[in-house]
Image: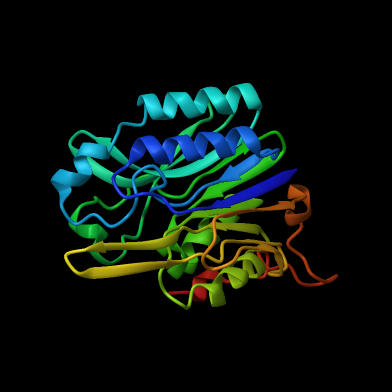
Amino acid sequence: MHLSVIQFETLYNDKAKNLKKISDYINDINSEILVFPELATSGYYYTDRKVLKTIAEESDSSTIKHLQKLSTSLNKIIVFGFPELFENRIYNSAAIIFPNPELSTTYRKTHLFYKERFVFEEGDTGFTVIEYNGLRLGTMICYDWRFPEAARSLALDGADLIVCPSNLVTGVWQNVMSSRALENKVYMAVANKIGIESNNGDILEFNGESAIYSYDGSYLAKASNNCEEVITAEIYPKKTRDKSFNEINDIFKDRRPQFYK
């Protein structure tokens, strides 16, 4: 099974151009799983909820329907971030679109970073895993990486692969993602954006380095820190399911949650 992560500069408040770029990548990349950055349709740095609301959309919008059609016709799993409008609330969400539309769903970011909490609601979907065509897929978004419980919850729920659409700006996340893969024995895919966005003189620079990690924590593929590019790796989902690493130890069976706080 081939997995591709797409790193590109999402344009602020320009859904038409972002959607065209996403659609072109979907048509051009020959992989079964495609992962795009956080808020890929909208750009990231919103601090005015009224402005964000003009580009936010419901989970059954024309954008979602268009990408669902591509997913079904091309038999590809597509994960991308978008601002989700739901009953006058806005969530930082990821659409997880499967060729079978009955499985397609939305994950709402659980942990909000920096000024996101000025315009987004805290996510309420929780962490869930969906199985399709022999793959058990889990999703988290960006700052969720800071909380080991996020990846662990997905792994305990059976995830083979955890995808993480992101707009990362710190210089520390690279030190941790491989650990999330290793400690849970899962594949990890981080799709980060590149470029700079500013708001009232406050500047955010997104640092790329999108990556695909094997279940032993090693890199399968890594992008640069400042170029638009696609990275691809072959993954073997069933290899993640035996959580033992010798004839005695199993990282899940050895857990003693009664002593964890």
